[in-house]
Length: 139
Length: 335
Image 1 (cartoon, rainbow over the protein chains, first blue to last red):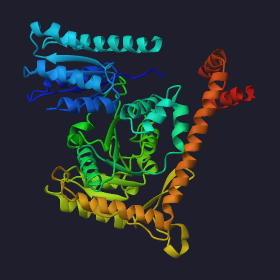
Image 2: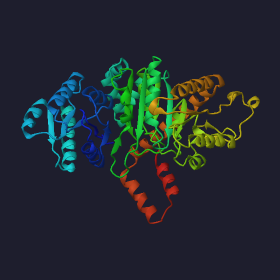
Image 3: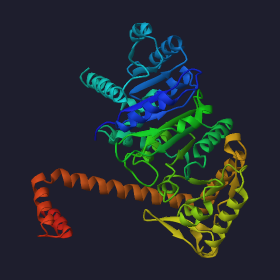
Image 4: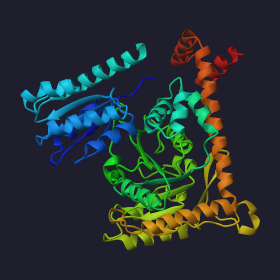
């Protein structure tokens, strides 16, 4: 039986716009994944706790508030502290291009803007997760 | 099994991974299930079922808070449907459980049905056992919420709560659905809404009409007994249980204490009447039969050459042989 990809879609921070997150959640479901959707206004602590309990392969974070440079480093740090450093993290929303290198250096593997094609996101997640699982098997 | 040891000693990351193993039913799952079995039997399992929109997740969250307040630890398994077309699922029950975030005495796990019918996933019972072995006192299991024929939960839980809400066409639903028979406790949620009183009346009438219908498990099959046997003639079920009908406004935490109290009374009834032990035996028997069926089928299929199977399919398709005789022939070829 093939392993299902489990993914957490979360909205950290205070902005109340979750349409993008819902669109991505639905697209990933349609790509055959199990999407845990936690809703609005999640703290980094809540997100990492959900990721831990649900044993997810990936976390997609939607941020439109401009607080990505504080929220994302905190989430990545908490993931590492909880032994979840191997979970794929990607972000979507309104994130200026000049911030992307810093986020990638942190370990945020993909950044998708408002115009991103949902199929590309699904493909990215599948490839990244399958690579990681491959690494785990051989490593 | 290092992972089992870590999970049972309180490592939540290990517990989450162990749950994935039994859920994926991978090569390590059978070993894991064997390793935890002797640690199970401590938890009380409460099932929560009912139609979509009745407030099952919110009720589960409020019940969890009440149990936490009483010093008990709580595991929650929330089941949502897998799309039959894509195999994907959106699991959204955590949205209504955010009050529980940050509490180390609560562990929430979302599950997709992965093709299983009956309101639970195939591995839900196994996941419940893992949480039981990990030491959670109360396990709340929230079903998919098709609202009908979700009988699996009655088999898996000690106490089953059926949640209704006003204005969902309940009068008709209550008659139509076979779901009333599995209720140990009936909850009319959103009781601050118009029509709550009539929903309660409709449920009351249904219980009267059915002369306290009870669901029993007989050789692993759920059977409904419409006419209660007089207590004197049924030593095993000396105290007939009539499901109480309670009203809650889960969003505001109203009426939750009464539900907790009703659950406790029902659990007491299970012990005193011996029904709990009878249910447990029936469940174990049903589980054993399921495992036997799956094991035998797997053995048979691994021994069966694909060509033999394909050849037989050709003959059935060409109407040279009927499927039953074909099955008997294939079985006869195997020692």
